[in-house]
Length: 279
Image 1 (tube, rainbow, N blue to C red):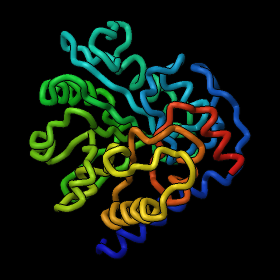
Image 2: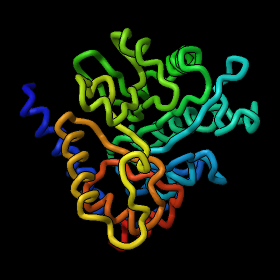
Image 3: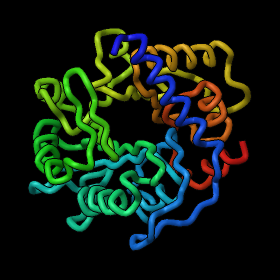
């Protein structure tokens, strides 16, 4: 596939994801033992610090979120989900909270998380040592290989669930692997140098490092234009764009949606879905 065809294919997939928002929004709340689940996915909705919700993963799935985020620490060879080390709990493993339920759901739901063929991403934010945490994750992911997207040097083989590594990322180690079960979460600075979408499918950065607008009043036109420029720059590379640290308010959501930012970070799951439906 040449560069032009690849770009058109990516844009088509991107537009299809946004058009999914306009489809039927009737929701049957998913249960762990439910029959095939009929929740319309929001491919651009990203559940920030998902594990902080009362029902990790499931609260986000109830609202159709196509992306969730889990922070992990490597403790005694176990990948434990928590933001802070002193909050880790041996019962809250990455496998138990996320990987096992996702595998069960895909098996019940026609081969995808929502049964609509839309992709789903689990972003894993490494809080502990990059190399050792990645080695432990790589070993764990082998048991889930049929479920997962595979990243090759020159192509991406899509699976029902895509893993993206953020936080303390072992870039050199990941780049040295000919095939990976996880993608790399790049930064805006990476857009200024060669970067393959088959290595880094995402670009994420801190909103406050880029924009001064805090959601009060109208967004300055210069910042609005800069936001669109960044979206276009990432899109030309076939990458999805996300910001963390943006004010979690309808005013900011509106600007992000208007600019077609690929991934919108929020802790307010139901409020965000209601906002999208009304919009």
